[in-house]
Amino acid sequence: MLEPRLFPVAQHGTTSDDYYTPPWVFERMGIEFDIDVCAPPGGVDWVPAARFMTQEDDGLATPWVGRVWMNPPYSNTTPWADRFIEHGNGVALIPHSRSAWWGRLWSSAPAIADAGMFRFMRASDGKLENVFMPVVFAAFGEECVDAISRLGPVRVLRQDPTA
Image 1 (tube, rainbow, N blue to C red):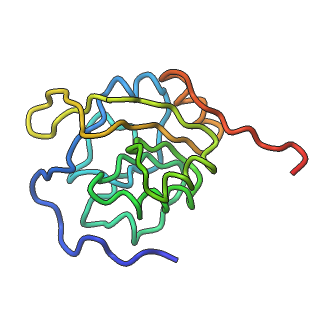
Image 2: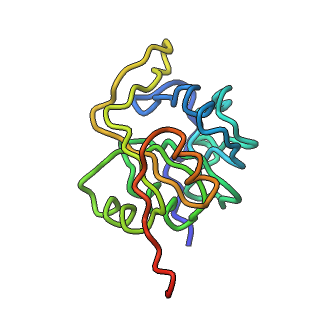
């Protein structure tokens, strides 16, 4: 069941949630995405996605298809994390949190890579800066797990072969 619309209007400027993933991340991962589910208006030039969902499109109310890239609004991560887990195909750059969704992500994501105090690009001027908490890359799907392994060490969830 899709969540109700989180945002009733289009985004016309930058917000406190607008921190972009630097280009080197995508260059190193070497993977393309079908959709960026949390894109700013017009998308980000270096994000290799065929489609960009903006606030106006409302990624929580719109079906996700294929491999997703997700750098969600950290001011309200829970519905995005839950949707990402449910979709089960993609890469997310997501805050490490003591929220209930974190336990669900930790126990279900095939791979998680600690990015620590990651430096994002500010939307306003492109300068790199840390956000207020550590972040991780989480991946579902074999190609996505391989992609985040090119970023550094990952914790791979061992699947029970008898299950």
